[in-house]
Length: 370
Image 1 (cartoon, rainbow, N blue to C red):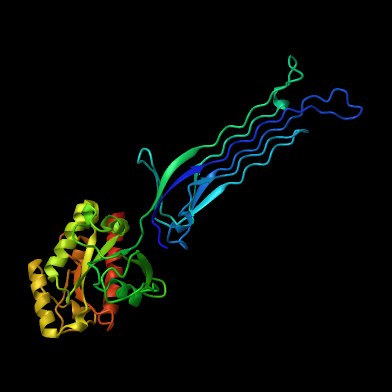
Image 2: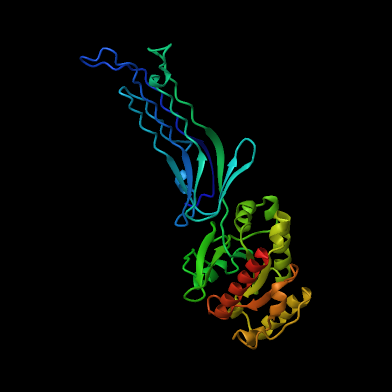
């Protein structure tokens, strides 16, 4: 089961108490105090593991606690430190304070291990309190308490390219055709109920991560349906690919405008990311009608068809659009970097799409670094 938000109470361990003890041994008349120190309480750590993609392990758990330190013992023996608690989470997990709403940790780097709550310090044994004026101390320190926090763990998927579109426009089919992801595919809306990630291999040494986001509907940014749950997962994507269904009962222009509006309402920053458009299911419509629809779509967005198909080895007879390479480095957020008709089922234009998405992602990354 996919779980992307849980509430937990997390506690570090209490330090063990110091020991009050006096050395007693045959023929040793003045042994003196020898109480050892208490052990440190266990700390709480978060570990980021890319092999996990859900918070389902924490479902149903209320309180997670590190072990307490053991008390000290005689003969100056220290108590055993409490075992640390290591919470394994997928990349993209945020730790948010329930009471204040403050973001405490943003865990994005794979294999990172971050200390969250420090264990309580163990108390000192009575051996530390002996002196000329107090040769028989009968007290020791108690261990310090651990820390406790009530937090939300919230997962926001991290990907290079996020697929955005209405339900049943072919997002799952595309990601299963381009990557190693195997989402459920069926001919009805809301087949995909959880985000899916897939690695798209461009060459032996080049690849990018693609996220299949469940279908967005009108009013998603206002919380309609599961809109906010879905939109959260494209917040971190570097680039967006709008998928427009050429066979949908909604007009192509309407699909594009509605999706852009929902994303802009949800996050202005997200709406300024580099984006492209894929027109899907072109195998299910005749070429003349398709070209007519594409021309209308391009015209409505102030775009003109160009020779992108020929440049990237796609079907020459289909209309398409692409900005020049010079424009890619200084892209205009109001215009797509390219518009390409595809069919994931018939595998039409998938290779050109793969390379264009990779270059778009690289271009976006370079611009962020500069």
